[in-house]
Image 1 (cartoon, rainbow, N blue to C red):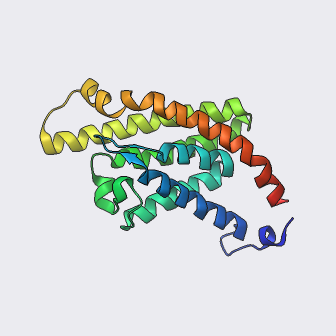
Image 2 (cartoon, rainbow, N blue to C red):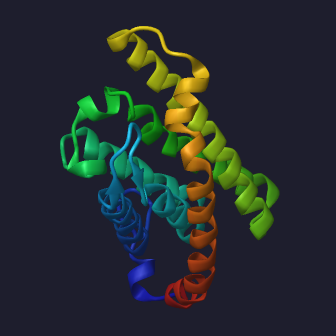
Amino acid sequence: MSSERAVKTGTGLAVFDLVSISIGAVLIAICSWISIPTAVPFTLQTFAVFFVLLLLGGGKGTLSILVYVLIGAVGAPVFSGFGGGIGVLLGSTGGYILGFLFIGLIYMLFTKFFGKKIVVKVAALVLGLVVCYAFGTAWFMHVYMKNNGSVGLLTVLGWCVFPFIAPDLAKMALAVYVARRIEPVMKARQM
């Protein structure tokens, strides 16, 4: 085991783990800035969320997502369009950002209980994405109706989910491909 990996912090995490978690959070932030504005912006955030979970695993990947959300909540401009602050999380698209945590938690549970085969990882990401969509859509509807009046579920799905399914699945496939290429390097580094 390398000396960097062996050095533990007061949290029980190795220094290498803390650096990996931090880099994961930064990657999600950078990918959120690559954006096409719409009702719910098209970003590379979901690619980064998938990639971080695949590369770091459920626990550390979910911590990266949590760090990203907390950094944004305190006002750092890490969200789409260089947004930041609790107002973004409480806004109409905040549920989708918070939904990334569900992707991480589902991925962590799936890989813990069903193993780490690629089919399990992909199934966990797909289920997590569905839960993220559901939570984000419910949140969007609540905020939208509070501010603008009634809106139908199919209308909101047309704005916030249907246009994102194919791109998110493509980003997931790309994340799987890239993570599988980088994983051997990460494992060698951890030895």
